[in-house]
Amino acid sequence: MELVFKRLKQLLRVRLRRCKRMDVAEATVRALVIAWVLQENLATELRTALSTATQCPVRSWRVCHLSLETLRQDVIGH
Image (cartoon, rainbow, N blue to C red; front, top):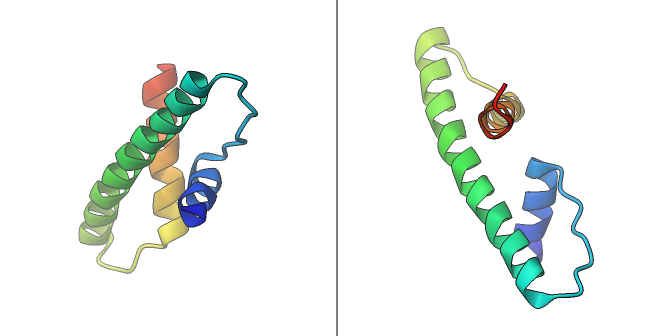
């Protein structure tokens, strides 16, 4: 379980906050997991598209960065 939270913090640049209410903490964790799944799906699509287009290996950190930025722009709206 610790590895899941470590991965979430790394990928989503999240700082977990202390919550006084359990329902708030639960909603936050669920939203982070949904964001992580969306990012992983987008990263898979990007990795496939880039490796097909460039026919060379694509660095994982670059795919992660691109997929996170795309997801952020979708959520923010610009």
